[in-house]
Amino acid sequence: MSKLRIFCVANQKGGVGKTTTTVNLAAGLAQVGQRVLVIDLDPQGNATMGSGIDKRALPASVYDVLLESAGIVEARQRSAKGGYDIVGANRELAGAEVELVNQERRERRLKRALLPVRDQYDFVLVDCPPSLSLLTLNGLVAAHGVIVPMQCEYFALEGLSDLVNTIKQVHANLNPDLQLIGLLRVMFDPRITLQQQVSDQLKAHFGEKVFDTVIPRNVRLAEAPSYGQPGVVFDPTSRGAQAFIEFAHEMVKRVG
Image (tube, rainbow, N blue to C red):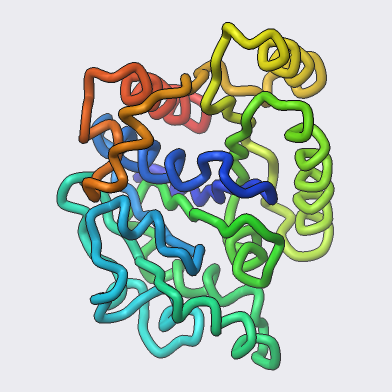
């Protein structure tokens, strides 16, 4: 029996490719034989739509799971194109923050909800919103580790130190299992000197924590969500898709 790994895909900076990373890693892992569940914790519901699920027509969503009016088994749907299961999100989720504030053990709702499906998956990937909210906290408390997609730009390093501090605080106070799994360089263009320099700085500072795989800037990856499918399915021959398949292999090897 393989051990379940729960990973948050998180970065406090918006527009860095968290959702692209989540759905393509999920589809890539599915293609290499892993059983995968995606949890969309972002009220924008982009991972839901990018998996081919209509966020406006969810019978139950992650909102219901966090408020304990539905379990993951009822709320999950199959991404036929991606080959994984997903618990979807929509705008309703934005209200969950307010409703959870006065609830007992509010930051542990997701962790508890995942218990009944532990044996059904090899990987759970949680797509976190780009802010340190109660939603992100639920993801971090439930997870074993954090995958940080980041662009190699000057300001990315500043945001990264905030995120690393957050992970340390959650590790110390709420979840002793939580660790930084690795940094994934995304939307990478080796022709830009600054990106190469930031990439070198990352490797100098974080060493082994920087994934070997680099995701190139790729138009096909950007187009895929509008067709309701992950890039690795939409155009398997594109450089971006092949990089994500390589990343899936690296993940399996790293945590195996």
